[in-house]
Length: 584
Image (cartoon, rainbow, N blue to C red; front, side, top):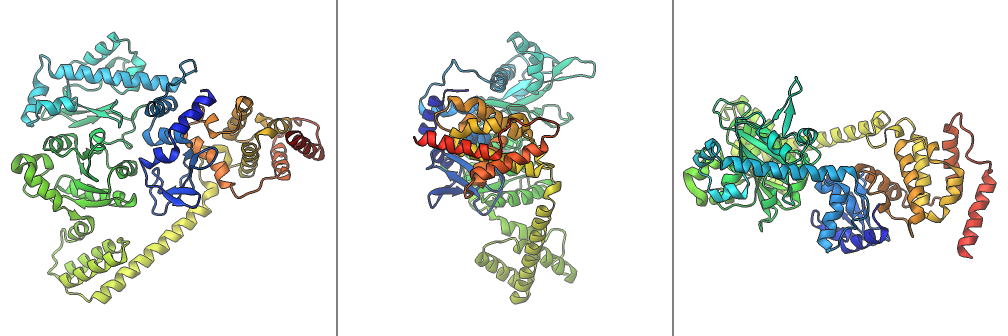
C-alpha cells in the first residue's frame, strides 16, 4: 500500500471535481456537485460528487459506480491502480514512492503495453522493408508518407512466425504474446502470428500508448477483410475509438464518426483532425460516452449502402441517449467518405459537413424507403413509421414543428397527427413504467456480479453494510467491533474482504479514507464500497443498530462458537467506556 501522506498529496493536487470536470459537466447542487454519469446512459443526473468533504469521492445512485479520484480515473480510462496513480502523479509533478510494492496486474499491463509498442515498431519496419506489398497498397489509397508515419501504419508479411521470433528475441514470453492477442496457438500447440499478409493499423489510447491492432488484408479474396485484436488486459474494443488520441485535441466541439480505419485516415489527411471510428464492432454506449467528453455534436459519416444506413439509425439512438446531438452526412455519388474526398476534394467535403441533416429529418426520410407515398397503403405505412420517429422527440416545440411539416407534406390533418403522436408517447411511457416495475419486482432473482452472496443473504448483507458504515464513521471503535465480530463471520465474500482490509490497514491510518481500499479492490467493488456511506448518509447508525447487525451475522454463523462471551449490555458499556476515553 502506498504511503498515506503521498496519497493525501496526490488527491490534494488532483481535486476530484477538477479531474471529473475534464470528462463531465458538473453542476452545483447545494454543497455537492452533480453530473450525468459517464458510466451509463441517463437523462437526469444521478452521479453525486462529494468534493467538499474530508474524503472527496463520487457515487452514482443509478449504476452504483463510485470511489475516489484514483478509482474514477481507473474506471473511465480503463487503467490499473498504479497506472492511474502514475498518471495523476505526473499531472501534479509528484514522484511515486519507488520502495512501495507494485501489484502484479500493473506490471503485467506495463509489459503488454511495451510489447505492443515493440510490435508496432516491428510492423512499421516491415512496411518499409523488402516486401513492398503493404506500401504499394497504401500508395494506391493515396496516403501521404507523413500520414502513414503519424498513424504508425505497418505491414505483416506472409511468415507464420515473423513477429513471434522478433518479440521472443526481445525477451517476451509466449504467454505474453497470447495475452496481447498478437499470436495464437494451433490445435497442435504451435504458436503463430495472428496478423499475416495485412496492412496494420495500431490502435492508441488517449495517452498515446499502443493498446491493440487492426489488420486489413491485401489479398483481394482474403477473408476476413479486416481482422481486429480481441479484448486483452489493456484493450476493450467497446470502450475505445480509433484516432481518438488526435480527435481529443481538436478545437471543434464536433466529432466526425466514420465507419473504418481508412475512412478516418483519409478524412484526417484532408484536414479534419476531429474524426474517429469504432473498432471492428458496432458502436457502443461506452464509446458514445467517450465522445460526449469531447463533443456536443457528432456527424455520422457511415457508408451510403444499406448496412451503413441501418448502422446510422442505431448510432443516432445511442448518441441521443448520452446527450449528444447527432447529425447525418449525406454522401452523393460516393459510397464512403474516402471515395468522396478523392472525387470532389476536401473543400466539398467541408460543405457537406455543414449541410449535414439533423437526425430526425434523416429518420423521417428513411420512413419512405421501399414505399410508394402516392398509394394509400404506402402513405398510411409511411405516417405510421413517422409517428414512431416523432414520438421520440423530447422537445415539445421541436416535435410540434416536425409534426406541422409532415402534415403539410403528406396532406393530413395536423391535429389528428398530433393526437396520434401523443397516444404513442403515452403508450411508451406506460410501457417504460411497466418495465421499471418488472425490473424492481424481479430484483430478488437478479444476479449480483460484484457481491454474489448478497442475493441469497440480503438481510446479512445489509447487516454487514451497517457495521462497515459505522466503522467508516467511527474508526476509533474498531477494536470494540473486532472483539465482537470476526471477518470470517461475515457472510458475503466482498464485505468480508472489506472488513478484513479495514482491520489490517486502519491501525496505520490517522483517519479513515476510501483510498485504503483502492489498490486491492477493482473499480466495480469500489463503487459498492463507496455506496455504503452514500446510501446511509441520512441514517443515524447507533450502537443498538450495530449490535442488532452483529446478532444477525452470528445467527447465520452456524456451528461456530461466539467470538467472545460479552453480553449486549457489556458490549454497549464498552462503547460508553471508549467514548469517555476519547473525550477525556
